Each structure stands twice: as C-alpha cells, then as structure tokens.
Image 1 (cartoon, rainbow, N blue to C red):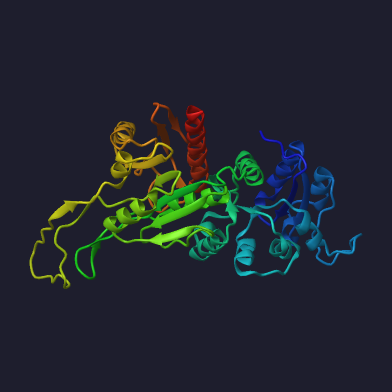
Image 2: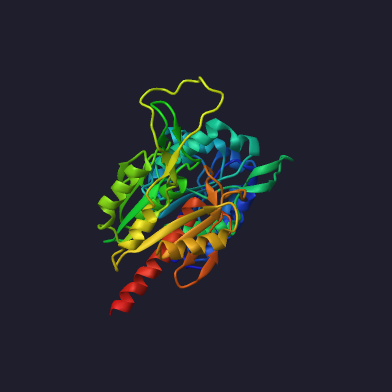
Length: 407
C-alpha cells in the first residue's frame, strides 16, 4: 500500500452512526505516514468523543468555529491552507446539501469552502435518504464541481433496513485517498480522444431510435484523463451530463455525425477510447413530416451505420492506441475477443449489461479488460471513475510498450 508520508489529511466527521468507523480510518492513515487533523460537526460529537480522535490523531480536534486558537489565522483557514486533501467520512445528507449549495454555518462546511485541495466524500445514511431525488441532485452538483466520491455499499443498515447506504469499506476509502494524493501527470503531452453517450437516428422530426447509454462511462474516462494531464477531446452523443472541466467537447447526435467528428480528430490522438454506444442501424427513409398513426402496423427499413471502430482499426497510426468497448448480454468474452481481433483494436473493455451494477445509467460497472496479446483481466464492481483509472493505467502500459519496442 502506497505511503502517505508527509501528506496532510483533513478529515471531516459528521453525524452518521458510521462516525465510529472514522476512528479506524484515522488510525490507518497515521500508520501510512499521514498527518491527520479532524473536524467534527456538533452532531458527530454525540456519537464519538472528540478526545478519541485527538488521541488517535495526536492533533487537536476542531468543532467550534469560534474556539480560541494559538495562531493569528482563523482555524478553518489555517487547516484549509495546509491540507493536501479533505476527506468527509462519513458524509451525511446534511453536509452534502451544504456543500452543494455553498452553505457555511459550521467549522466543517466553512473549511470545505476554503480548501484548494481535492475533496473526497464518502456518504453513509439510510437507504431511502440516499435514494431521495433531492439528495441525488445534490450529489450531481458536487460531481460537476469535481468532488470525488467513494460510493456507499449495499447491506444491512443500523436503522434496520437493508439497502445502499453503508459507509464504504476502509480499504476502498484509503485507496481512493492514495489515488487522489498520488495522481501523477502521466498523460501530460498526450492527446486522448474519447467518445461517449448514445446516438440518435431520426424517424421523423419528432421521433428517433436510440439506446440506453447515459454517457457516464465515457465522461468518467474523459474526466480521469484530463486529471492526469492529457489534452482530451470528448465527442459526445446526447446526454444529461455536464462535460468535465478542461476538455474540448464536440456534441453530435447521429452515428454519421460521430463518425465524421472522430475521423476529423483521430490523427491528433495518441489514444482513441471508443466508449460511446453507437447505433448499429439507422432508418433508411426519414419522413420529413411526423408519421401519422393511420395503420395498425408500421414497418421500418433499417440500414447499417458506419463501423467507426473498424474504420479506425484499418488505418491506425503505429503510435496510436485504439480502445473499444463491447457491451454484451451473452457470450461476453467470446464476443469481446472476436471484436478485438476483427476491429484491430489494442484493448477491449467488455461488460455484460444484464448484470446488476454493470448496466446503463448507473454509476458503477463490472468489466473485463482484454488486450491484443491475449491478456484477460476481470475487475470487480467499481465506480465508473475507478474503472476509467484502470483503463488509463492499461493505456499507459501499452504506450510504454510501444515506445520500448521503437527504441
């Protein structure tokens, strides 16, 4: 496990029953070499004594914004200035709402507004609270502002319910902290082209054929790549997502439009990652007027769309890596390996969309990563952002292999 020597971790503990687990988190971070300062909300102090965190962290615990300090700077500014990362674990619905809307009415929320470091949020709450649409909207606001998350887990909750809401395993939280603190700019100087989302194929001016893709996987890849220093071109079909900061966004609607834009930009890219769910077929004839409901049956004639991945594979520059996605409902590995070979791709990311947690419009995925040498690697259920990081790790490895072969 990577050392956190000389890293300053600021831990926010809020009033979830999982607050006691944060004691273990502090202990493990200290053993990895980090310096940990703890800020507790008033509600959290009803569950765990500040003295417990003070003893484990060997640092004073901050609760009161107006407590006397030994230095001239206000406590929240002093802590914010020296923090390498702010971790809020467990994070209640209350603190998430405050962060999403810029409310600063206690020590933790005020410090969170003042930090200039990454913020990692690990929610823990009742499953119905977690599923509440208002809470989910607040999470989305934080995602748009580049907050990082460790998703809660499914299981038996302290309130007696069973569902998603348990604080993530300590190992996952620590791994995420290490990744955020040790993120290198290993793609600096590289250009990554990413496709994302569905395409829409018009039937008439008001109707179209599409698929269930939300674009979340492709957007996660783009966000991860830009955070690692890459110049990112994101070619996106219609989604409800906001583009990650600092990417060049190209919006398209149809498969033909996506093909044209990909071909336009592909030669600039060191790697092309085709995460979009491109429609295989489009209506042969598009009605200029809305099709009226005049018949009991309607027969649609469809024709093939361009195979963008295959076209790129036929004319792939020797320096370029080509990554495809294979979304299946049966014979996952056989279909993915066949696609990898037929499209002349270097890497194929395969998932069975019928599996729970791996389908469309969810924040997690379960994938296999297969490369052209025959290596097959299965990843467990992970957030799509974490899957994106693993994909980029594989891309980096293959880029280094290409460079080694040329020397």
